[in-house]
Amino acid sequence: MADYRYLIVGGGIAGTTAAETLRKADPDATIGIVSDEPYPFYSRVLLSKPAFLLGKQPFDSVWMKKPEWYGENRIAFLGSKTATALDAHTKILTLATGETITYEKLLLASGVHSRTWEIPGAEKPGVHYLRTLDHAKAIIDDLKAGEKKRAVMIGSACVTFEVAEILRTVGVEVTEVMREHWFWQPGLSERESKIVEKHLIDHGVTIIRDTEVTEVLGDGKVEGVLLKDGSIIACDMVFAFIGVVMPTGWLESSEIALDRGIVADEYLATSLPDVWTAGDAARYNDVLLHDRVMMGNWMNAREQGEVAAENMLGKKRRFELVSFHTSHGFGNMIGFAGDGRVADDRTYLYRGDEASGAFGRIIVRGKVIVGATMVNRIPELGTFVKLIQHGVDISAKHTELQDPNFDLKTLLPSA
Image (spheres, rainbow, N blue to C red):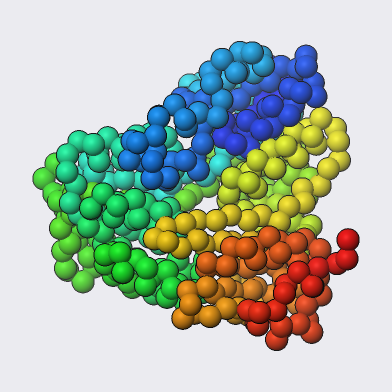
């Protein structure tokens, strides 16, 4: 039975940042990382970028840590290992192999997994996901294997947007099939989406909305998809970007608090003693938004890994960050700040000129801004982050916020 002072489940940005933080502060501690992937830490952000996915960028550029880094820092990397049970009373983690590991302090940074497409034919070669390095490898190999002419994309969000552009640049016909009424619903408002959709259509993407694929067709490989209305779309690639799932089922017997993720306080401590969480699977108390939220992006996960590690070391540091990220494609830059969820207790203000293609949505709860989405208004994103961070009272400024010529920076507190 292996034994570690600090044990981490998850080898991505949150888990690796935590391990690095722990090592710097505790040079003599035993540290282990359990990862269900065989690879050392790599950039998930790079996976959907054109140069990488088209095989034009050196493959080795994906690595954020080389194998030797783990040895040099005396961090045990336990790759291709899946955690299956946790006993917090005895502090024992059990793996699918039957191996057991004891710990003094545990970090759960297991992230999320691509949702598996449960329809007939979804297992055929040519059906792709894009969450892991193996997923990216499969797409790269498929594009290299021969001329691909037609692709169907399922779902509408960041990865769909970016991969659709990549496929169009190499001449692949793209049909977007989505359950939603507009692209990126509800992440973007319908008014913002119209700008994005125009660029998709102008670049040759066909959009089919309010429907879904019921079967992947083909004899041993993808040859088309069947829609619920009985129509068929011929294709030789399908991208099933249908969301993610939280791999938390194995934790249910541990009696840890779960709520569509791993519940944590503002210190990223879970309901179990000496167990913390970080990254995409963490549902934590956000002291800036005054709400319990999940934020699945690289920046948030990196910072949480560091904060969780400091608290594992005995410090008392709250996680305080206004999360933001961007996505780009077809000449558009889309930005997201704070909490963009749609809810009944929120007011939505709009800023900009739809006709110009520069337009945004400001999400207000009570007297403060809690989120913003920006289409081609990226220079304002940083100011919205600061307005959320400082909890600026904007209750008397709704008219000004909707004026695209109003200087948002005048609302910020004086330095």
